[in-house]
Length: 102
Image (cartoon, rainbow, N blue to C red; front, side, top):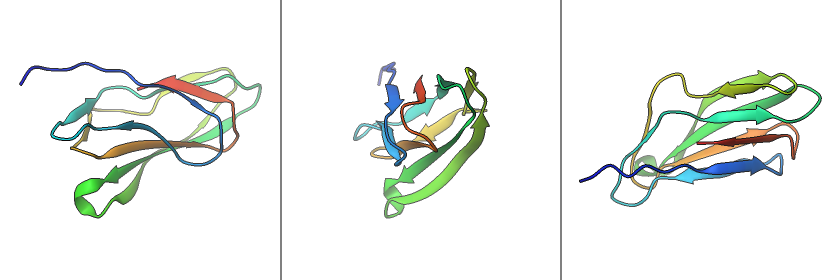
């Protein structure tokens, strides 16, 4: 099977967990980067979660940072593997301040 490269851009417009990427059926995704940018004038807490579809959609927190004003960070420190139908969700402590790309 050939590699298929994809990106998913996002804006966290609420303080709820937001699904930013779901691995397609019958595929495996290798996530190399979750680049987040704080466009706000203050610090914002950001959390990342994965949902494991093969384990009754069990959810796991995989990152938790305090992102300073007008800064960029990468939430993935190594390759993250998502299997078929697994999802990546992000949550910010304040709305309309975090944007990025997976």
